[in-house]
Length: 121
Image (cartoon, rainbow, N blue to C red; front, side, top):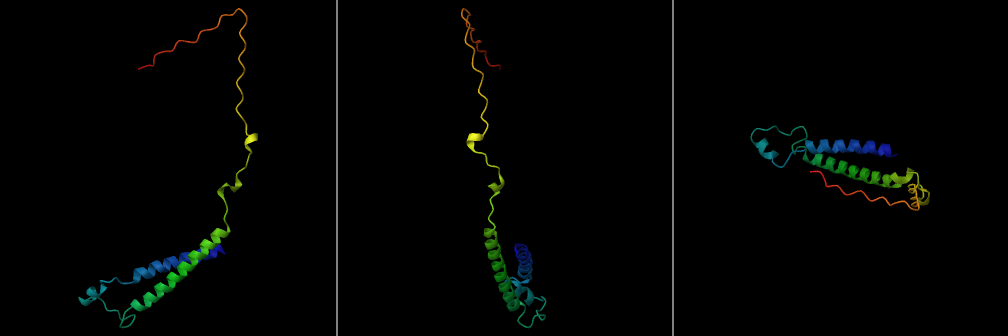
């Protein structure tokens, strides 16, 4: 069902874009006064009332398909984290402990720590 609504939504979007681009702006009357084409195809009043009603109808369908897609999307709410393998914190591998230091042998001299070196320039 979601696929059908998406297809309808895309067709309605393209229709709405086309209808809006077909309409004349507010300044179109001045262009017609100086020799522009007349609007006799749509009658003496022009295409304005027809295109305005068509725009309103297509806009309503656009809103309904948008709400329907939102509702259908919420029904299928799936998390991205759902498919991850969960491992409890106690079972995670901890780093191996360092080998314990050997006790010094009796009579052995302790080794001095190396002298710090000056940083290179």
